Each structure stands twice: as structure tokens, then as C-alpha cells.
Length: 160
Image (cartoon, rainbow, N blue to C red; front, side, top):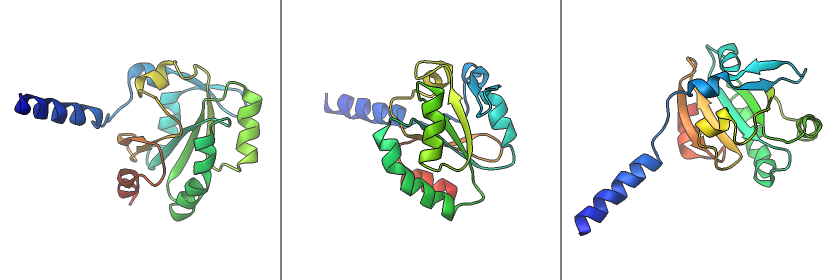
């Protein structure tokens, strides 16, 4: 019985911490809005950054943990200027999204997730908390799938 529980615990932990390496086709096809209000597929956002490592920050202007993490994010940006930064907002209103970008002086590329929390993109990445950071390498492969702080050891190790 003890061995069975140990095996189940190891299996659960390995599944819980497994990393996805790519986005689902549904996520890649999900339409977001850019700052001008134009639609863009998530795959096209990734394509625009091919050749560069990218940190994706999924956030919202109403999210207290997101706001609390901005000083650490800005420090990360200062220490890693060669990294591209893409912000994906889960705000419910476009005006609040744009006001949040300005208020918190967020530097990077900005997109609004039209489909929301339960849409294809967020569902495919098992989004259960924000902020959520996803690190892509220069080819667009996911290097870090789930980080909720920019101080995450796995995230920092992969950036270096």
C-alpha cells in the first residue's frame, strides 16, 4: 500500500509539473486585439518575435498580484534588455486595459485577449492564475510554461 501511494504521488507530481513545449492549434488561432484595435492571431504574434526569446506576461489591470509584480518585472526588463516582452491582457474592457498600460508604464508589445479567461488561448495553457509568465525561445518553443512571478527560479535560469 505504501509503495502504491508513493508511486501515485510521484506520478501526480510529474504530471503537475510537466512542461508543454508548444501551444495548441486552437490557441494559435485565437484572435487578440492590438493597441490600434486590429485583430491578430496569437500565432502571428509569436511569428513577429521569431529569432528572439520572448517573455509573455498574462495580466489584467484589476489584478493585485499583477500590479504587485510590476517592480520585479521592470527589474527583469532592465537586467535583460535583449528579451522581447509581450503583454496579454485579460481586462474586461479595452479602455481599462489601455489605461493600465499607461498607468503602470508597461514597456513591450500589448494585446487584449478578446476571448477572455475561458477562450481557446487561456484554456489551452490551463490558465488558473495571473500573472502568468511564459518564456519562449528564439524558435517559439515554450521554455517555461508556468511561472507566476518573475523571481521563479526556473524562469530566471532559462533566461540566463
